[in-house]
Image 1 (cartoon, helix red, strand yellow):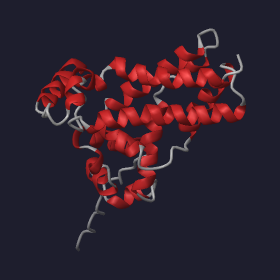
Image 2: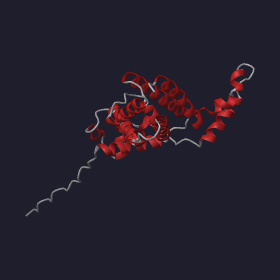
Image 3: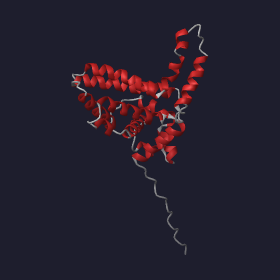
Image 4: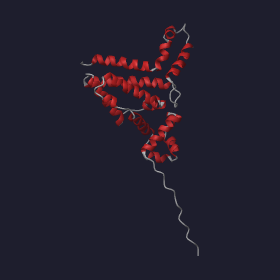
Length: 229
């Protein structure tokens, strides 16, 4: 009498969640750059079929939004909401924090600028910034315009820095980056571009902390001039 064939034991289907998908996207961003952050790339990173990722994210754009939200969610808003700190200092802390976090993942800057920043963490940053500007004495319309101007200044400066970095690697020390830029500027023909040659040392330091803070201060000077008090 033939024995019954034992049933085949199937391995449990591996389950992932949104957080694990975002974590995989961040790993790809840090090792291979923004172009590697795709549905197929994430699925391969997790050892899954692409359909498993589509369960949580309908397309790459949705993944990008989640990654942007993850990065913005690391921002410490406590500095913005500390009312006993001068409003300009609070904005400088936020600007420096965003620059530090985004340049740690140079490829993230391209992702950040590739779509609208309208998730909960982005809205929380915007709300906190509007509150600081209201504390500075701006009315709601002025605060909204000033908030947009600051975001453009901050992200624009960060994007220009990121464009020079060897993504996806973290940036070299600022002194090294300044020295590299200075060497490149020495190759600029001084007879054709005399003013550039004259300002070469300043231009080389465009990626410095001082230049970044200088740009923020000039924007804040204009905003302060519009404040009520």
